[in-house]
Length: 152
Length: 152
DNA sequence: TTTAATATTGCAAACCATTTGCAGTTAGAC
DNA sequence: GTCTAACTGCAAATGGTTTGCAATATTAAA
Ligand SMILES: [Mn+2]
Ligand SMILES: [Mn+2]
Ligand SMILES: [Zn+2]
Ligand SMILES: [Zn+2]
Image (cartoon, rainbow over all chains, first blue to last red; front, side):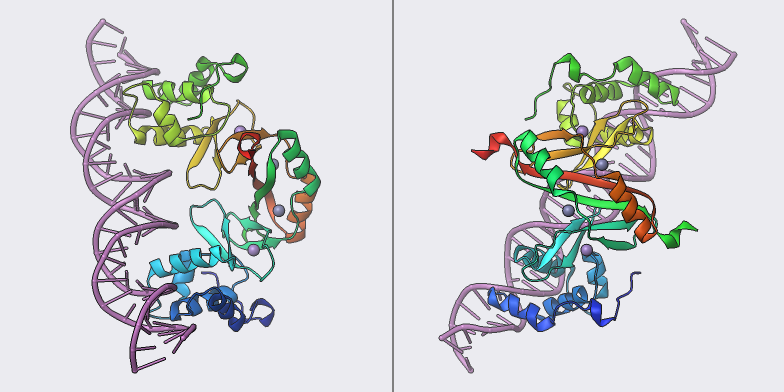
C-alpha cells in the first residue's frame, strides 16, 4: 500500500549507527533486526507491525519476532510508539537524543500521514497541570481530516 | 474500584429523556439498556465496557449485550467513545445536542480522570489544516500525569 | 387484549492485535 | 573455537471486541 520513499533525505540514520546502539546495550544484531531497521529507516512515518512484517524480504521472520524486536527497541528508546486509534500500534524510528515528541495529521479516508511540528501550548498545559495538582503532565495528540487527494 | 457519585449534580439527564431518545429512533427500551443508561448517568467520566458490565445489577446481561448497546448508542450520538491508549474503549453519556468534544487528564498511576475544558487552539488547528490542504480537521487529545494522591 | 412484525438477547464461536512458553539456534565475548 | 546469554520459530494463550443463530422480548397495530 504505502510505498517506501527512496529520497536520501528520508533515509534517516545510518544503519551502522543503529546496530551500534543495539550492541552497546548488549543486544545482538540479527538478520531480522537489521531488516526491520532497514524498513523503519526508509519510512518517515509510523508503521504498523503488520506493515513492517509485510515489507520484510521473502522468508523474513516470524511475526512474533517483529513484535519482540519492536518492544525491545521501544524500551531502548530507539523507536517511538504512536496510537492513531484504529487498534494497531505504530512505530517510528527515533533519532538518538531526541525524545521524539511530535504529532500527526492523518487522513481518515486513505490513512495518509503528515508530520506536524506544532504542539499543544506548553503554557496552557502548565496551567492545566497546576490547576488540577497533577505533576509530570504530557499529552497524546493527533489530528484527523481529509487529505487533498481524497477531497475529490 | 471507582465509586459512583450520588450527588444530584452528577446524575446527568433524566432516564426518561434517554429512553425517549431510544424510542424516537425506533430502538427498544429493554432491561439491559435501561440498566446501562442508569450506570452511565451516574458516572461523570468515561467507563470501560467491563466497568459498566461489573456495575450491572446481579444477573445483569451478557457482555456482548453491553458491547452492542454501546455501539448502538454511539451511532445514535447518545454516548461518546474515548481512547486512553490502554487498549480498552471508554464511553461517556452525551448531552442531547452537544457534540461532546472535550478532553481528559488521566493519572498514569491510579487512572483517576479529570475532565479538561481547554482545547487545542482553533486558530492553530486551522493553520495546520490549510497548510497541509486537509479539510474537516479535528483532533484527539488527552493529558497524562500523576494525580495529587499518587504523588506521595 | 391479542397478534404479528421486528428488534434484542444469550451463548458460543470467531476475530484481531499482541504476548508468551519452550526447545532449538545464533551472535559475539573470551 | 568455545560457551553462554540472547534470540528465534512455532504454536498456544491472551484480552478486547465482534458475530451467527436460535430463542425471547418489546411495541405498534389490530
Ligand atoms: Mn511521525
Ligand atoms: Mn469526559
Ligand atoms: Zn505535543
Ligand atoms: Zn479539543
